[in-house]
Length: 96
Image (cartoon, rainbow, N blue to C red; front, side):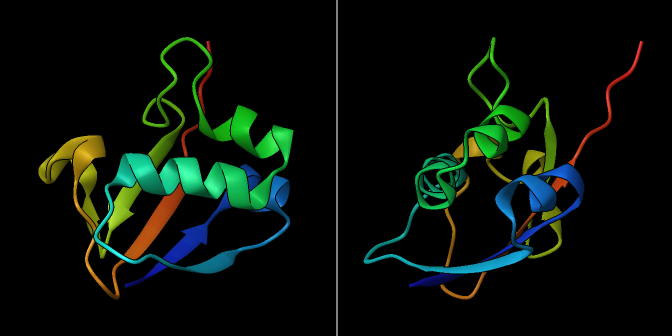
């Protein structure tokens, strides 16, 4: 199973890449994909920008789309990916 990942903004800069293609033996969830991305990219700043330190969840820091649909309209972080899905991570700007 192949999943296409696209990173934007600070996530792209921290990862030093814009696109990745990852192969898996069986279907995976967004949560598992995020863990795999962190281990494959292996750059501490990428993990810091993607994963919220308090909640250990990427959703406060990134809008996540699966083949054009925001994961909130699916099954959230536990949405199952299918072969050929494109997962987009768009960083969310926080201010105060």
